[in-house]
Image (cartoon, rainbow, N blue to C red):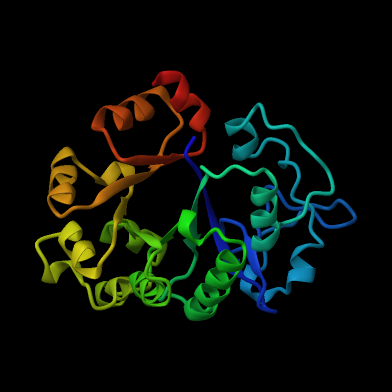
Length: 266
């Protein structure tokens, strides 16, 4: 594998934490007394790093979807949500100079109450990457394009991956948002003002386009490459059908939960 893709949030006390969801994931999270958290769980941005690191996230809840999705997972107790700094320190300790960091800044302008402040999160991430000498090996990903524009201003050498979702999928995630509100994720580079998403991303100075796998066609790839963009498809299912299709489409990168299966099929 060429790299590790992961998401980061800012805790209430300003620490960068590594986790995917905006909320604590109830399928992997227990209290210090061993009790499973029940939904609705707290948002990461509402808890301090000390509160977050009091949880144990080392095993899956019995019979949950994740447990069946990863049958080879080895449970370990007393595992805490890592900070970004711990992650970077662990990577540097392995002395692997080839591993890329595909770091997603998990923010959304559609509901600021559930996510980190984008500028504060970006500033904290760039500072830690710079101090750990990992800036040049990092690709920043975000659905909020303005964050990536600011990243290029602050760190011109960093590479960026402009993520995209169809209005239909955005509407399912944010049913109370209007189409105009959903368009705020694009900032000043609204795709409807350009001949498509790739053209808008190229105009914004991005190197990568990150479409959802099920929403991208072969013609989209041709269009992206005509604008000098690399394409990273995310949301590739860990099935032979999805992986074979993704490999046949010849993306520049694919992001999936089971890269070991992709290697077996290459």
